[in-house]
Amino acid sequence: YIGRMHFRIARAVEQCLLSYKQLQDIIAILGMDELSEEDRLTVYRARKISRFLSQPFQVAEVFTGTKGQFVSLADTIKGFRDIINGKYDHLPEQAFYMVGNIDMVLTKADEIAEEVARTKALGGGSEEKETKSSGGQKSEKKVEKVRNGENLIPVTKPSLNNEELRKELRELAQKCRDLDTAQAKEIASQKIPDGQGIAPGWNFPKQTQIDQEFADWEKVFNEQTDFIDTIKAHIEDATIRHNQQKEEERKELS
Image (tube, rainbow, N blue to C red; front, side, top):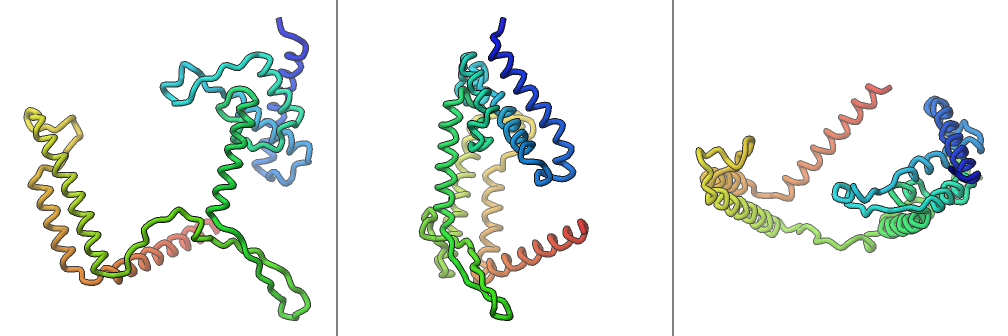
């Protein structure tokens, strides 16, 4: 036995999803811009409904890491009714995915809004530039995004001194060597028979191999005199190859 409201909301949800399915071919061919305002609302609401149909289950907590949610029938009907009526047209689609009742949707939407605001704050502000046409009759203001370095998370800037850079690279290489040595000793202490390793497919280098690789690296390291120029040359070469690849891809698609 279901109530009249339950039946009407269920039919409305079904009709919205069916209308969206019929519009998918038009969207794929012509895009959203060719739809009427009413059809656009149908598409947006159907997408939110399809995401709101998802729910974190308690039996899946160990797999998803998300706490399961129990939603009463009344809250379920109320949530879908409000979506159909357009009460939450202003909320992003992501807020409706893997949540419980509609209150959790509102909470998730606030979290998304805070994250977007924080991202914009880290990205910096904008500045206006006034440009004029060749005739000098028209002028327009162009807003360009400017990345504000002061708002970014502070990180250690790389040293421009070649000797300091060499020191940091050597310390990093020695640290990696020490970690590999410690892990090699731990594996060797397990006394795995026949030297087959931990399991089929595992082949961790032994101490002699680690020492040889470090010696080969140190030889190449000592031959390099100016790391700054080497790194700059590598970046420039990588940029050229990247641009050439993009140009080739553009020609293939044209």
